[in-house]
Length: 263
Image (cartoon, rainbow, N blue to C red; front, side, top):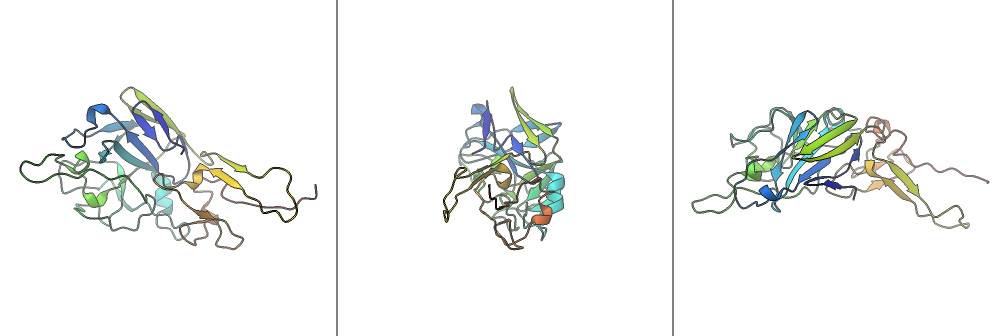
């Protein structure tokens, strides 16, 4: 868990790279009851406004990705990563009150206009286990929110990802609380933990790679496979992503090399 909390703001990581999705959560007691209508929650993201949707547990959640990286690699056969359908600034809902503030967005549905109800139908794989958005309650005498997520977002468009061009240092502010998130090549940090400097002949070695950059999806634990074939370095597929490691922010990381030594 790489998350950090400052006051009412929680981010999935304060150091990200490439196409990692950043999860931002607001826990504000003043707007935490999901069973009554609430005004929408926003925060500052650098000079932009980030729009949140309310979850069934009362928290408010938004997802963010570096727009340029996502555009370069979304659905590419060279990476197998898919952040959803690029809506740019065109995402709309059947509820006229919904707004993404003109932000670039990525939808898990195949349409950016009035996706309505039901599960998303786009092949997005960047968010596998997003929390559940609160849905509106219909009918006379019903108790609960009047709008999905308290914003009017169509059910099939959740989870949406906001696309911003990240700066080296990104400032997220809500009320009096502020968190800084740094971004850049190899920014997520990495380390390799082994069994020590002495091993016996024939011993199997257990290595632990601590590299937050491998966690593209903040809602689940991904599995990566390293092999000696041309289909090495994969996640959830058999795609060789060697040629994309640099532009995905890995720099010299993402490659596990082994060499013999007589010393």
